[in-house]
Amino acid sequence: MSQNPKPSLHPATIAAQAGGLLDADTGGVVPPIHPATTFVRGEDYAPVVEGNVYSRTAAPNGRMVEGVLAELEGAQDAMVFPSGMAAVAAVFRTLPAGACVLVQSQIYWGTTAWIRDFCTRRTITLIEVEASDTDAFVAACAAHKPALAWIETPSNPWLRIVDISACAQAVHGEGGILVADMTTCTPILTRALDFGADIVMHSATKGLNGHSDVLAGALSVADANSYIWQAIRTDRDMAGAVLGPFEAWLLLRGMRTLPLRVERMSSNAQKLAEYLSDHPAVETVLYPGLTTHTGHALAVQQMKGGFGPLLSFVVKGEAEAALAAVARLKLFHRATSLGGVESLVEHRHTIEPHTGIPEGLLRLSVGIEDAGDLIEDLGQALGQ
Ligand SMILES: *Cc1c(COP(=O)(O)O)cnc(C)c1O
Image (cartoon, rainbow, N blue to C red):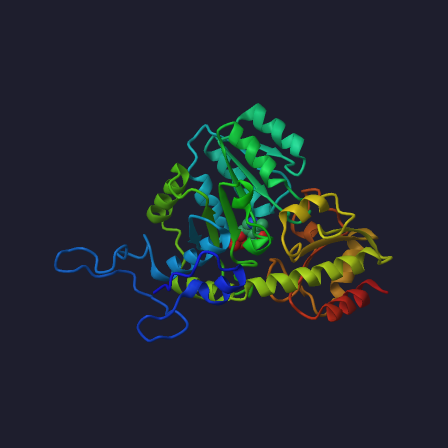
């Protein structure tokens, strides 16, 4: 099925051609959907196609998208899941009771909430630390010797930038592994494995698919023979958190335009961030592409070709002013999620009122529309 693309190809080529996948039976330039759940064996009772036995263990469309993702990520292997949270859970379920984990504070709320609950039930010691403060992260590693550390950069919705190399070095020094949620970056902006992370996680629901029509998650690994990777594979196989063939096929289709979309979302977000920085109704703009952002220098080192679609800003006048501006927006959909082709706006304080999110904070996921149209919409909503 695969034409074995040369490893030196650039992301735009790998993505556009889905890693060289074709339909071997028809010569179609798009691979087919394989809905079969079970696969025949020959007279010798060996599987007719090696590896194809039952689709909970491995299924053709899942393998296709995993192959392309691994190539984009510079990974030895990748696995897809039916949601981002299923991928998070697959990682944490490999931990034995009594283990210790270090998790970045103020990250995607769903991750924090699930991990807290899981660690309590499993009697796993959970240490939360502001990982964008490298000294705090290193000190927490030395003090607690975690088996696993979890970071997210840029973080959601604070846009904090975490030094992946420094964190990897610190946790490796104590014998643990580093997992990085790189949902906001996608492998186009940052390949975290190149910076020393052991496993990269993505909510593929977001930028990887990019069209707000597939729920999926993914993990990529630096060492496919590592104990944890084998344990995650067994867990997915046995516990059954697998992505269906239609979703896998759609995800592969969405990923064909990933580099283009990321480029446009990033350049649009940069323009909006600069516009908002000068706006009198705006108190602060959190975007790593701004030279005034505390993580800017590090973001320049870690992010290639842009700073992603996610941008938060604080409106003067607390919740009332922020919600009034949101109500006036015409192009931005008032909806959660990020990384899709259409721009979204969220008032995070309404969603998670007790987590310290400023009342006036609005989070934007900037899409691929015309930047001028988006700026005009923000302008009329904020009152120029
Ligand atoms: C959405 C999201 C998740 C969870 O992914 P789902 O696909 O919604 O399960 C995890 N991390 C980040 C950063 C996200 O944005």
